[in-house]
Amino acid sequence: MVESPAPRAQAPFARDDTARVTRFALVAVFVVVGVTIAAHLIDFGVYDLRVRVMDAGLGSSPVAWVGPAALAVALVATTVLARRNRITVALVPVLAVVLILATRHLGESLPYWQVLLLPPLGLALFLLWREADRLDPHAGRVCRAGCVLLVCAFALHAFGPAVLHAFGVRTYSWPDQVKIALKEGLEIGGWLLIASALATTAWFGAARRPNRD
Image (cartoon, rainbow, N blue to C red; front, side, top):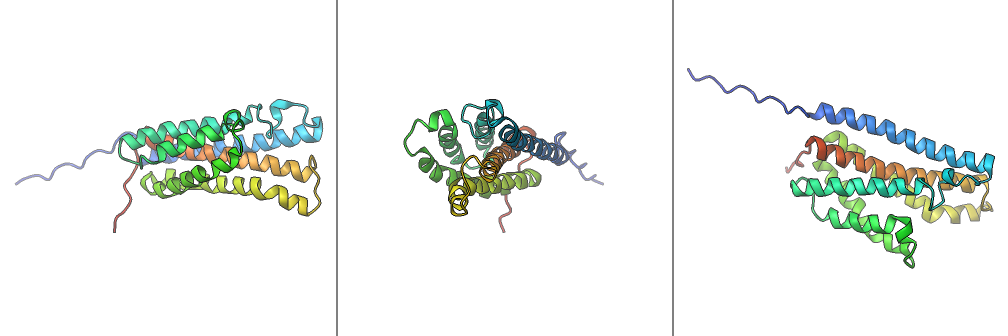
């Protein structure tokens, strides 16, 4: 009588590990975004934006580097996943262009850099949303949540000033500063979520193929 082969043991880094890491990433991102928004509003309300470290809208503040740092992590993780054929290789150069243009000290030296950012950013979000099906289920949901936050941040950036102006809101008023804090917080949160989803999948090797029905 031939015995059936024993079931293969699960890899040590299974989906449970990915789920724990993604849950931790969600909490960490929530804390970072909350601290960023609170620090900016405290700087405005108490210090009249004199504390440059707390000013989320200032290009030279530490906050300005959180998004590009997270984007760099996402780029490295995407490169690793692309080499394993776990994600489309087209995402690598697209994220590289977004990283260059999103880094304020580089992007602001280019005329109309925000207009230049829109096509590669839109393509990156499209590819990230589509490729989320190939990630671990938990990481895929986190990746798509990051895409939603980035879309909201861009909408606030593009349409927020016009809406506030239409209601007669002045610059350096509370509504204006809340808009700035929310925009920066959503942008940071979006890239942190995407970076954590891609990095977790690359580290644990828990990516899955999309179903082809």
